[in-house]
Amino acid sequence: MKDWNSLREKLNYYKIWPVNYMFKFIVPAQMDKIARVEALFKDEAVIYRKESRKGNYISITAKQNMFSAEQIINIYKEAGKIEDIVPL
Image 1 (cartoon, one colour):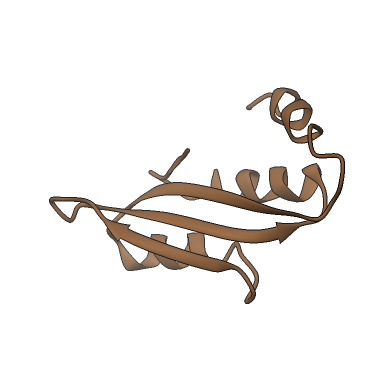
Image 2 (image 1 turned 45 degrees about the vertical axis):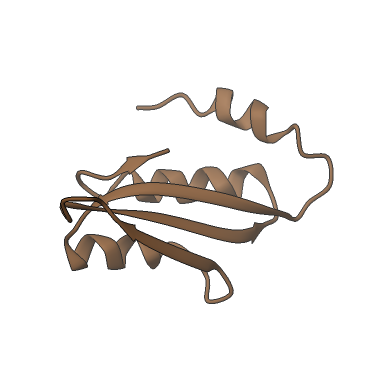
């Protein structure tokens, strides 16, 4: 189990919420995993995909207004349930 206190402390650097937070994940180029990562975000999120050179992985960058450190941590926790993805 990951210790989320370190991330929580860094996120508390933001004094005014909401913040437009950027998430980044490396995902195997499998449509089900890509869809699961993108489903973590609301409709208003801006999501970019970039394929790796060999096409084995997709980089997913999502920008979304977040209203608390806990909301950000919850997205990382849900993403952690998806096998073989790497949060950056």
